[in-house]
Image (cartoon, rainbow, N blue to C red; front, side):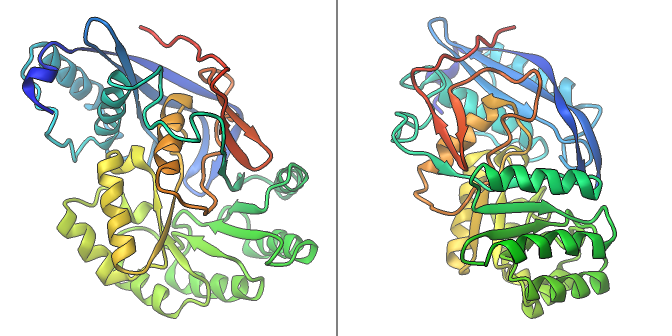
Length: 353
């Protein structure tokens, strides 16, 4: 962005701790709260808001110096010396917040970053129904609720219970609905060893599971490549993509592992430009992709949903997370059945310092 267009912009931020209505379990632990920072950019007449969202134990910028770096960015913007064309690779959450706040500042309407049929309320985005980890009874309850709500794609987090119990959950869904009626995805969050993953993949194939996200921990490229080559179930990379820069390194990862799918979390990957690079690589190497939120508030979720819609994809996205928090930002985003809609007549809550 040209200096003349940004030298008069002023920046500030506010921390907002989101509280889960019910604890959210993953193989990395249980979330009760999560922190976001709302980044405000003001040019005197308009204000744009972006979200810098941190996931404990997953974000590469989950570090003691995060807020100090965000303050330094704001100070430099206020002094007129910040280069908006630079990229904060080591702080992708701030990069995402800056990118979305700028888009909001120069938008055609309040929080309309990417005008489309979605923001006009004419079309929705299909989402997968997310099943959080917990005891078997709780997971059964979640599955029943999602199926009753009309979801045709269920994403089940696995890796916290014993595999026979989790296998029973998947088998129960498949017994009730065929693969043509219900798409089942599972997300291991890197919970398995290589040998454990081979066993799980074999069992999942018999249940006609659509895909598995991150069966083993990130960073083991050779082992992941072997799984992708021999797995009877398509493998999607998620945590594997976090912290991978620059473009040459991204290309090396995709060439080495040859995944079937990429999972894009713009808030963890450094924004939409960074995510667009992954999409380009997916297309070049015959891999599919879909986007998911990284448990942002409705500020970040809104930006991701609007961006995804412009990609003209029909795949179920992981964007049904707006109802998880007791203190989310009221917004026009509404989940109706399995589709996320933007209702332009519904007002946004005021987000301010």
